[in-house]
Length: 315
Image 1 (cartoon, rainbow, N blue to C red):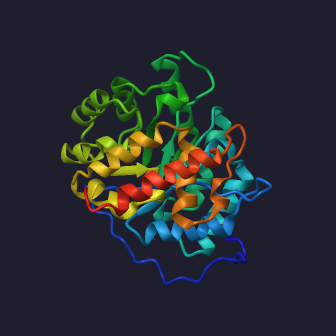
Image 2 (cartoon, rainbow, N blue to C red):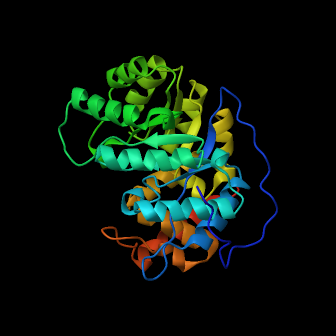
Image 3 (cartoon, rainbow, N blue to C red):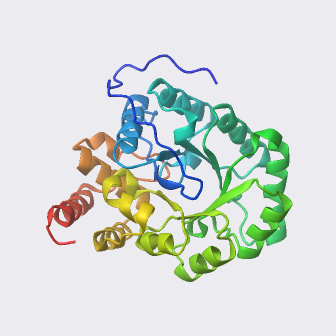
């Protein structure tokens, strides 16, 4: 894909250090939040600068267009602009995980081909999320059609299990079926179910895959049981704190407390409120409809909680 021109306002920073990816370790990827300007348009310089910050503060990659990034609200042409902005910032595809958020097979294939053209590290593939109560057979048929139509563009697929959003859980048997139908193509599963019993079964049944823990409260324990890291919304805020959890399975009760607090609010606006607090930049509060920004008192309360939590000596 052709890179966009250098964006005005893009900060000049040192070259991002090269990071190797051991075969047995995915590492920590920031489920990157997407900045918008006051009119709701993409803020590409702010996005590129944030991606660089994540990569120089503990993340091995950034994930674009996921749930935290409001990916379902970012159109195809806008997605291409985001990839161009990352390229202009010196961030190549080997540092980018691309999340497909589409219910139509046609749109999912278009997004997957865009990711392949940018040579993204992985394709995070969300199940179709419009129709509810669908069967494993139906979900398998959707995934299979997407992967077959992608052809050579389909590679290093991470299946995305986030039933609280999609209402389409990925069963252990469904994952096994996809592995057998597409040998070597399914690379991992991002489990954002928040269901520790399911996560344990996933690790036991599919330890040959990169199991990535979406709920940071279970991250350290999941890594100790064979998980390979995380695609994490909180990595937008404190990747340096999360890095030992994702890489070495070192627990940190502050993360558990922070997740519990964030879950008291709508999650995406809450993460953006924390971004605004961390950067002292209220532009990060802006979300796209149908989401609404966190009211100022709640944003200030959440920011104060974060400040007290991470400036305390207690861990």
